[in-house]
Amino acid sequence: MNSTTLALPDTQHAADQINRWTREYAAFALLIEQADSASSALQQFAAISRMHGQNDIAIEALLAALVLMPTDIVAWRELASDYQLSGRDELAEACARRALAIDPDHATTWLQYASLAYRLQRIDDAEAAYLRALSGDATLGDAHLGLGVLYLGSRRPEHAITHLQHALSWGGIEGVTHLCLGQAFYMAGRFGESADALAMANRFVPLEGVTLRLYARARTFASMLEGDIQGAIVRYPTLAGPETEPLDEVLRTAFALFSAYGMHEAAATVGRMRLESQPDDPVQRYLLDAVGGQTHDRAPASYVEAHFDEFAEGFDSKLVDVLGYKVPQQLADMIASCQPTLATILDLGCGTGLAAEPLGRFGARLTGIDLSEKMLAVAARRNAYHDLIKADVMSYLADSPRSFDLVFAADLLIYLGRLDELIGLIAQVLPAGGLFAASIERAGHGDFTLLSSGRFAHSETYFEACAAKPFEIVRKENSELRLEAGRPALGTLYVLRRRDRPNTESDQLTTTTSSASRQRRTNDLFTAPRS
Image 1 (cartoon, rainbow, N blue to C red):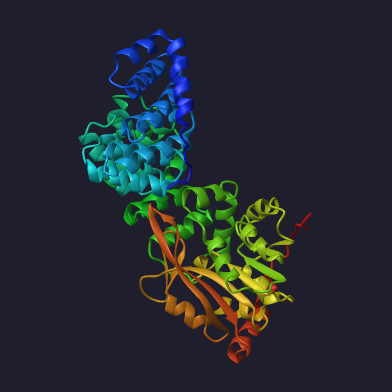
Image 2 (image 1 turned 60 degrees about the vertical axis):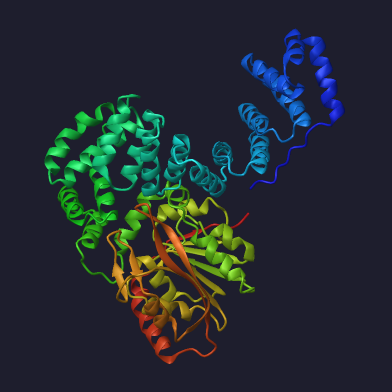
């Protein structure tokens, strides 16, 4: 809980306030005369002041009442409400905590505290408080609604659905609740139920803008999943009205969502439709292979470049804010725990430079490599990399005359199936004692698997076998890499150290690879000197 405290005025100050209000307000003088106690008169005076928009006087009256009766839970709760109305949420929360200290089992007070914690963006505290409120009174519709909204914002749609449905059962605000329920069903891939909930919300508040767009998509996707793809396409403009989106955008979204939720047959049908209209699209071609179970040893360079060029500008917001991506920070913390001395760092697949800030703590010269020119342009704006190079990582490593103290690969290996060649090349650019930090998405079976997302998952056994000869493991941690279709994508983070004695087979492999890859090296160089 938050540590903000609230000090009550002293007894003399409260007495002075009572005397002043008795002189200045006839209504208060009458209350003092007729009420059972001065504390009761002060609370009634606070209510009258509040009704007349005099919130500051209401707060002062309640503070004086609490000086006289510091264990009055109702006064503490009313004071919390008045502080909240005046925008002083931290003081409001402190009052709610004082009320809970008096009666720790009071469900409505836990509800009040939960809503305040949520407003203050202390999500874990808010969740615990909502659950505590419901453990005391399962019929609190507002607690179910608040918890449903919290889970929706935290991208836990199934949890949200449960509590939003309870909110409706116990008299929640129907229009708002149906609207939130429609969003939660959509986020969970339950498109028919999403459309039905949004249609119910429309009875209370007309759908428009984003909500109308969501309804049209949900109804259209539900029809597609029932097998009526052509009919769904025909009906879509009527459903969306002024919010109609370009057909290809709707189909692209349908393909992405169907793939993510394991609706592979529908995804493949939509993917083939898109590919027929755009046969040279490398992104759709590769992803259609992934959905169809085709095998690849790595994501094609044409796919990687086109895919990330397309999403470069909004990439950080989606990955970090929406999908909860924290791998660069987590890996950097693991590296820091090794207390290394680093003069040079190579960030493989650097993208928009999300690793630049967490790696900045080491004060090293930072080089970033990526295939996407537009991602590199975003990275350059951070002014954190000394060099940014547009290149295929395998080609760069094979030809690099430089060595580095750390090779950093957050979310790079998920675009490669076979890892032995890459790991051998990384070993080649590290001196003995140099570090290699990487993340993998964990596979359920086999050495590696191409997922319907187009990413590769690897088994820990396979990754560690590939790394065993040139490296030793110094740190290993499980991680939730990001959210995927509302569920955590599970992975493993590694920090490896280059062994003192190079392995002959590995050296032979990388030498052969170096000769072959010189012919395909991409030479575009972006220099981003730090100011």
